Amino acid sequence: MSIESTIDALAAKGIHSVLTQFADIHGVAKGKLVPLQNLREWVETGAGFAGPSIWGTGLGRFGKRSEYYARVQIESLRPLPFMPGVAHAVCDGYAGGEALATCSRHVLKRQVKRLRDRGWTLWVGIEPEFFLLRHDEHGNWRGADSKDQLDKPSYDLKSIHRNHRLLDDMRLALTELDFDLQQMDHEDACSQYEINYRYDDALAAADRYVLFKMTAHAVAQKHGVTFSCMPKPFANAPGSGLHFHLSVTDAQGNAIFANALDPLGLSAQGYNFVAGLLHHADGLSALCAPTVNSYKRLACSTSASGTTWSPVWKSYGDNNRTCLVRTVAGRIEWRLPDPSCNVYAAIAATLAAGLNGIDQSMTPPPACDIDLYEQHSIGAPMHGRLPRDLSAAVEALAVDSALMVAVGEAFCAEFIKLKRIEWNEYSQQVSDWEMQRYANVF
Image (cartoon, rainbow, N blue to C red; front, side, top):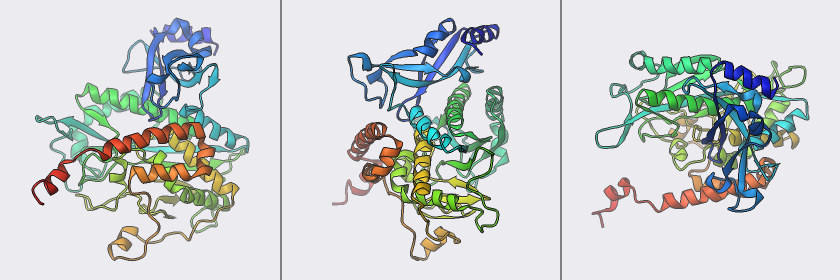
């Protein structure tokens, strides 16, 4: 549709404003409301923002490249059910009339182009896990449902019944936004849920996940609770992952990773891709698990439910949820990411690592056919571990030059700078655990 016909079509639906939305380097949605009637300006020039006011742009405080312009991708415009009269628009970042290298959506688009040049398409199915939280009378964060207290709460129907109105409002809003919903369930921690929807091509999947989070935040707020993407809010409970289900097809629609005759269902290129993920796993940890709290999830720990699904060891196996990479019928499940990641950067880095595995003909180690947690419990030799904290992950990314170049050196430099600051701030905090352990011991 032309810009003019788009304006007319949206105006006929009662739309008067456009929410020009982009993601900062942390993957947090940012933007502003602008008039629908000026859509041509928002498409061709972009809505303007002060560049240094946005995390990770790398833009200065003066000159042509101090302004960040969010250019509307016209095909993304759609009315927002939770903001009457407003249409949502995905935007790309520009500065000085050029695509901004630190814009994570551009980072992903560059990786997608590498695939497109081969005639390939990456399909990504994203599994969002999240907590519903609220403050108690003392101002402490707690699970939003005080009756949700089972030791093993996975698939608990009583919790779904108690929270049905919220979940149904999620369903209604997401369906109106053209999400093809597949299931909603209670996860393995109290007040933790998962909502699944149909896979899409890599860029559309990333756009859709950001829109999912915006919608979930709005619906939860309506019900007086907080939608939380914090990976591990409670020490004695499992954390939230953001698993990526990955497959690649060629121009004829053939599955590149699949081989029905292979024991794991993988082709040679599928194994190469897995090898690339494992080879770059330490550096990928920074982009896929980018917070201090992420590494409370990525730990070999026990949980109240008696089960943990955390991918601690760099391994892969057929339908093996104790591995970092789980293979399922020619599809690859990448279990490292968590919902605090910048989904554009995480998918871009994952794709860059896998393509490096293919281009370098990397060979993975033998597949894992054991329960790695049982193996660990008896003190048996283990596969290599992922970084134990954010600092180690960030430094692993800093020395992985191949991954840095493939993802984008400008983006990675800004990301590393901010994450080093985050780690330093965390390291200087004194926790309740330290006070309880040390205050009167010595």
